[in-house]
Image (cartoon, rainbow, N blue to C red; front, side, top):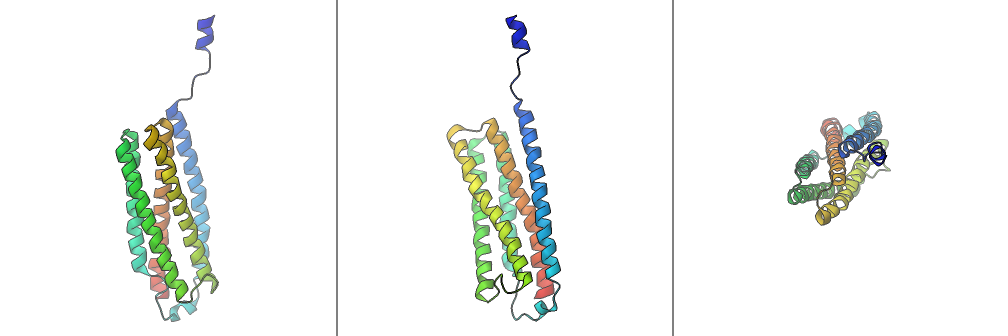
Length: 204
């Protein structure tokens, strides 16, 4: 009877199954976030169809700042990818190092974004000036808040890895973090192309 009872008792959840379901669910979240960003891009493009911007005496969209930010965003996504690989190999030191590097690149990205905003505001181009600038600041600030969240998320996940090593839950959480940082890099590619590259042609 005891043997029969043990054989029919509920089994513990398979960690691989939990990993797959969690990652898939996070993909769905990122898809919804991508749609949200799509509405912000559409708003920017619609509000940008104004001949006023062709008469500006300064470079509204600084392609040099944006190019530097693009490299920083790319490097952060690359480091996060390497960190996730190291986590799956149970290499705690490499995991901590790669994700810490991703944090540094994201921090440098935010510093450049701050200086670009400061440049515009000091020149009199605040978010209240026109609809295009409102859309511009909303789009970039939303992306910036996502970057800030990733910067907070990194140490939150690395502290348990440093103290306890890499557990199954750590693998799942770090995989989601990697996906989130790479998602931010994809969004930035769209920002660089639509806002800065096309903006520097149309408005500068």
